[in-house]
Image (cartoon, rainbow, N blue to C red; front, side):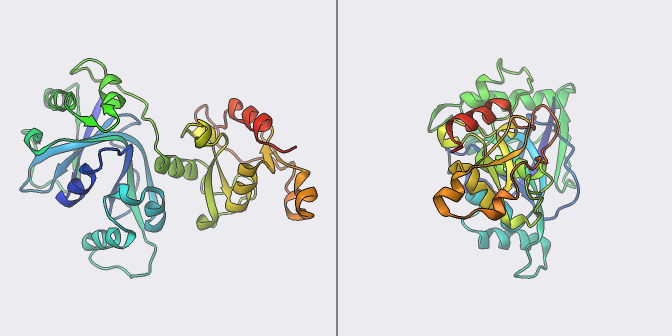
Amino acid sequence: MRIFVGITDFNWYQFLSAKPELDELNFWQPSASGQFRALSSGEPFLFKLHSPKNFIVGGGFFAHYSELPVSLAWNAFEEKNGAFSLGEMRLRIEHYKHSQSAIEDYKIGCILLEQPFFFSEEDWIPVPQDWSSNIVRGKGYNTEDAIGKDLWEKVMLQLQGVKHEVGSFVGVAEELARYGTPILTTPRLGQGSFRVMVTDAYHRRCAVTQERALSTLEASHIKPFSENGPHRLDNGILLRADIHKLLDSGYATISPDYHFEVSKRIKTDFNNGKNYYALHGVQLSIPEGENSCIGQEFIIWHNEKKFRG
């Protein structure tokens, strides 16, 4: 199993460690500089403070990397970015970028982490013996090597004492099983990660209209989260905002063969709907793959429980 140790600042750690209810966070990078390939989904990402605080102070489990406009990163994660407001977040980013237009919606690198955990200061872990002061962003390790194995054992030991307000740290510690045993887990997505991963899976285009204006697109649950629908790619679809509202309100649905269907009730209820009826029967543009293609169980639920016919 691979491990990555990323460098962050104390204020970011202090702000987020005071929020024990966190289910996800965005470990942002001030510049969008290509893909993050150091980890696979479910592998651990650890937080190391800037020098001279050469300690590992927590971590999370890697879910996804994306390059996002700063506004979308804020809208998706808000305070889970480690700041009180978008303005404060921009100030922190621009401190590292040195110069930036005050109105530009620039892109940043976003490492999405699930089930984050933080250690109390007395439990901070000293950096591995091979850590260099020249490291700027971070360093990768592997549990097949002695240093990586030792680091992971120390992390697992500290995880035994990590508590959340919802109870013991079952979301991580029990899934990782026995102490010291590196086991890759599938991270449970939070709302922000769900939104970003659906947006990227659909190549930032509405599945029905092919609209690409990012500010008009929304990640929709087929089965709503409020009705026990999971934050999973196979329960998500990227839609233009008005199409999203039609789906949520039952005036539209998705057929089992992935066509868009519009309810006759739009005309009877609103004496309107010409623009939407033009979309009736459109073949959806959806991702391929077992984990991202819309699940039939969610389509059937929406057809039977939500669609107005």
